[in-house]
Image (tube, rainbow, N blue to C red; front, top):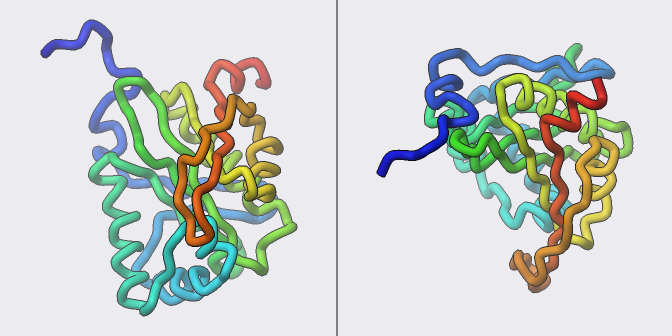
Length: 197
């Protein structure tokens, strides 16, 4: 069935080029994942807070390597864009920043992120999300959504610091190990970026 509108972001525009490395403030890089990141990913998912909010753990480096392969493959498949957030000097893993559920027709995507315990409280999450959002808007995406469990106040602070407006609450939407959770839904639009420039 033909559509009456052109896609907001041209399909193939990601897969036709290499995934870029993004520079964030404060000595951070968002770079494509490599297989060498698997041990650090496994270590990150030993953290109780990452397990709590991301509802998974990695039981081996091999399992973490499968995740990394999936994150890398998301770019070529144009299903997600996922970056390792690293210290620019040491290349040590500080977190993950990702755009999931890429919708080229509407120009929308969902923001996801985590930081390792040693990186928390240093502004790593907001700086990484800000760099990724700037890239997404430059690539033509028009709306980025960010959802988090209402009880995850740290994620709420990241959303607010990055200019993602709270739009509402989705009731009892996510199942975590401790039961069902309501979720805040935040969003930021390309038009808001233009107003800030």
